[in-house]
Image 1 (cartoon, rainbow, N blue to C red):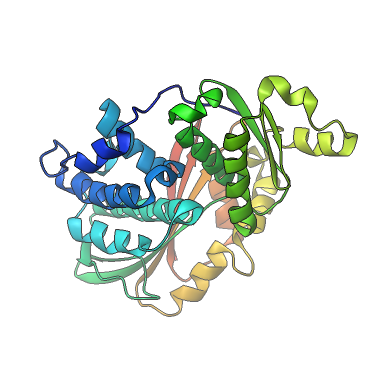
Image 2: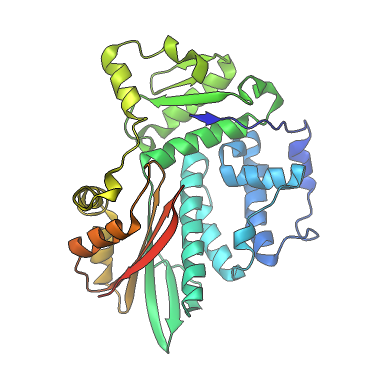
Length: 330
């Protein structure tokens, strides 16, 4: 469930974005570099750019003078340019997902800079590690992985609705509490169909939209859906917030399920570590929907499960308990 934003874009919002002079703005050099990529995307995609949350942040900066990327005002320009070039040709959920991974890399760069590392090269060859940095006259190859689970993917669907709600013609959703019920388990597999149904939702302007891939509805209308007992129990189960990251046994079970196995992040890091000297792995894990977490329990679970031939930095964030970082030394 999310409350949809209440702002309304003026009819000339796209022209004002086009006319905005980034070079004459008060943004830092790194913010300006990021902005130029985002502005180009907005001009190309027009209304469709409202499906991307960072594009919306930039639009709100131009139109409403909101803040823009305050935590990314001192990144190296070459790092930004080489990373953002990977966005060419992408749009929609693919663009947003890749953009998120790029900003995780930016965050990792900032952390390693604080640890005393300096950038070695900004080149991003196909298959190379995400960051190549120096420390104590040694060069380190740093590979960054982030965990994107269904909770975050659903959040992106809300971001799309939130962005489109800025348009005058979509005022029927502004300031409402909306809910999304997915009818499929894999958003990425059906992303084209899901986006099409979100467009249908806005075109039809129903309080209750019941598609083949998802349901979107005003929370006050929930009783009009899910009357089948089995379907209703599955839907309600999505609202159960887990406590299992406060218990070592359950924490280990979840870590094994999420990160270890074919095509899982830690397994892929282990495989890639054999290809590079001075390899360092980084795992960023956002835990959005748990009542509370015990960071020490999570750290202990990782330490009991893993015995690695490389250093692994693990960055954990939780919407209530904040952030936590630890290193599994080789």
